[in-house]
Image (cartoon, rainbow, N blue to C red; front, side, top):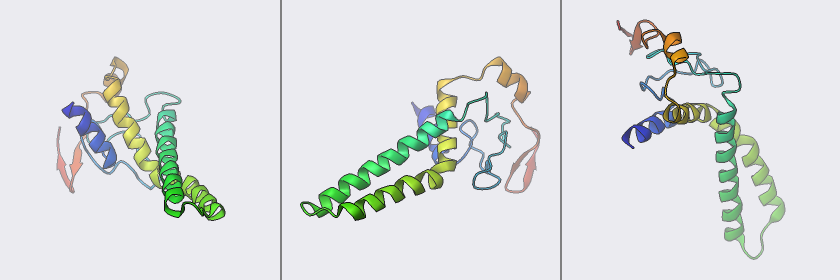
Length: 142
């Protein structure tokens, strides 16, 4: 249970779910192929990021539902449907873009929890390290 909370917490902080290393994104949409700390390969197979899309859609629709219900309750019985529709459409357009990096790291955390590293991943990662580990501009040899 503790490892699940730790992995999901790391995903929420946009860190590697296995080792907790940060700096996984080169740009807002650009994820590095491997963790700089432990060498975990992020895209394990073709179609891997479908899970991240599901996480992103789930968060977007949950946010949409909360905004919709809150708007209805706030303005009941004279609900401004046109304004609420505009806000709801804006939520469905903005939340997926804003939440994009978190959807990837949360999906990686769920994947690490649900699937142990198989032989292919261990072979690809070598000894589990991607070379020298870099933390706060200091180089630590594995």
